[in-house]
Image (tube, rainbow, N blue to C red; front, side, top):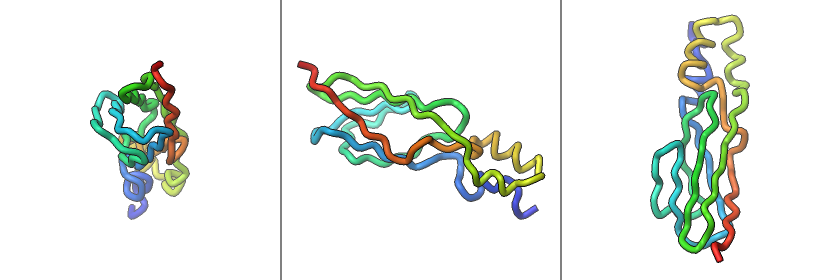
Length: 113
């Protein structure tokens, strides 16, 4: 019973990721529809775990907008549930059964000119 939904308990329903960039100015990030204004890089935030990819739009004055799609992969911590069907169900419902493919993402802005 103490190991029920291990990935949810140990990892949570959100994952911490960092965005870095090739620019020294601020940018606006829209992550799954949620706006993060005047971001400086490197920028660390949390995103939802889950089966759907996370969509990131990055915009900076003088640069072309960027789109980034963050894929998810299996979170091995879920294996601790072993044969506990309830634990697997809780991890799947909270999204803790997955995690972002990487912890750091590089945003390569191109000049708008």
